[in-house]
Image (tube, helix red, strand yellow):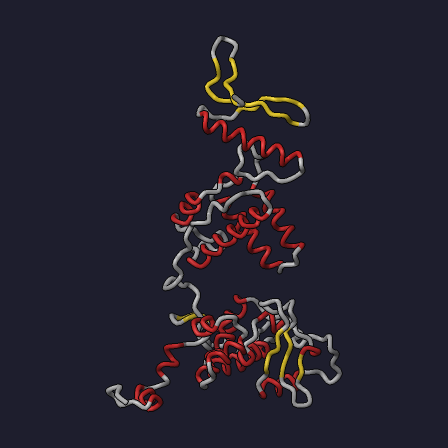
Length: 374
């Protein structure tokens, strides 16, 4: 038999099984750490398989018996270097790595073998809070922690370090009805008020950037980076190019511009402009400064219907188009969403749109009587 119980020297034998293996040309004995024969045979097979992989310079999957212990933080460092080498966005890398490290710390996961569904479920069930703000994490944020860890585990699978994802069957939190971040559209009066009274007292005046975000539907980062060479507003042209490295989808995109936006850009552009000059010669502030400036102008930043953060300006642009009868698929194209359901769910105030159309108008448009008969 290839497995055996070692003699103790007093006529008795060890309760656990061992086996003989060859490592670097030398025969040695390894404990299989089990008293059951079937399990010992399985451990022996996995141990020899791992030794063979090591001799070939290949990684040993962590599920094999006798596999070298791998510290999670060491593997996370490799994961971060891999993402950096693939030229992924630095913010994405930072956020993902931070979530993985935080989750490993709060769940007391040091080695790969420590990662279990039970550990994650216990952390989630304790109502986790944000270390920075002290506020309870939202369902969406908890899901992001789970997805970041699972992305890391899937990367380990592809590297041959683990055989399966231990969190594969952990279900996500229900986010519907549990939203903590809602946005509301800007009214014309609110935008006008901010443009009139929202000038910050001790920093660059960024109000024109807010106006452009509202009337172009661009994301904050997309407006911050374009150069005048990316803007085509001469000879009847009315479009801007968002370079791939600045767009969310990592592809170069064309943005149609409204006539009043074209006029505003003409007035902003210096007489002696260069293609490499930035359209906005200032930095847009952070969300907290934006909130302070709105309140200084007499506006309400947050109410029961939602917030007036930077992304609410993009939301407002989508709603403004919908109110004027622009088809959903056209709005989707303007906002550059992959799925029209994203546009419908997050960039339109459905309740207000419904209120703008009376039942009589619905009946008239469908050619029906109030009794819904032809």
